[in-house]
Figure 1 (tube, protein in one colour):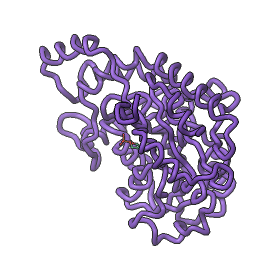
Figure 2 (spheres, protein in one colour):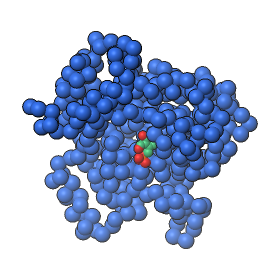
Figure 3 (tube, protein in one colour):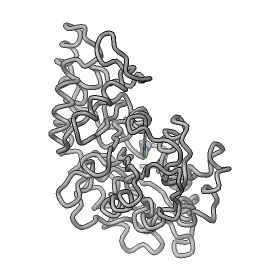
Length: 369
Ligand SMILES: Cc1ncc(COP(=O)(O)O)c(C=O)c1O
């Protein structure tokens, strides 16, 4: 088949369940006319997800960004927060929306997460928290992170938007830190079109998060604080209930595709990929590779363009770095000299397409040639 007849392959294609599985739920919504505000499906989905993810308390949100913003409100985080420049912009934007100064710390070269050993040098009397990201679903060094946080009296809020279902030593990654947030955006391993959650470890905190996501209402006539509207609606929750029935199979298929990539790319000079980590249950949400121009012969951008010409649309996640965007670039921690590894990875990284029904053989062939 000539190149022009090939169907485009995007970096991801959202998993959707068979429509007939969703229809009975929609009929119930139409019958009850209960569309949002803690309806039946919201309650059921919240409980099923809490069990599935093996966490104590979880509060559903309409998206991950509002979950992040609300998580920072819940913990009353102020002043400065240490975070990574190698993420999606929403991570740092959530600080900005709370009038908090982001302080960027470099990432480590093995899995591109915040380098825990560089955190202490960035702590000042104004630092109140750390906002790390389990980037591409690979866990941060959660044990060392907690040690540093405990030593300095800091909160840890994990942006776990990529880490649905990930486990470390059999424990959910979401059980670490003070709070974690998830995203169920269309591009994520698990989607409710848009959606998100905050995971916390005690009932009191969940109660407050639930107030905050509903304008601060703590009863019909009591408002306990300047909450926001970030509730998940019944349609999203119904879809979530159906999606949960398919998630194990989706992750299994993603694992097979990752293994196929690894097998196909293992002997190519100048193309590096991440391997599974011992004692970690991965979700295979992304397949990032690094392109070493000297060894591979062409740059990351040239490979990106070559794939594009063949209708394969990888994404250069996360390039440019958040620290280089106009809102943040004047911060002293945003300087390139402060973030050498992040700058290097951002120049070399390319996320190859991955989704449950992908046939990635043509992508591998194009990279080999
Ligand atoms: C690391 C990270 N944090 C936060 C978000 C924001 O989540 P949402 O799109 O659900 O608002 C995303 C992606 O969308 C993300 O990749």
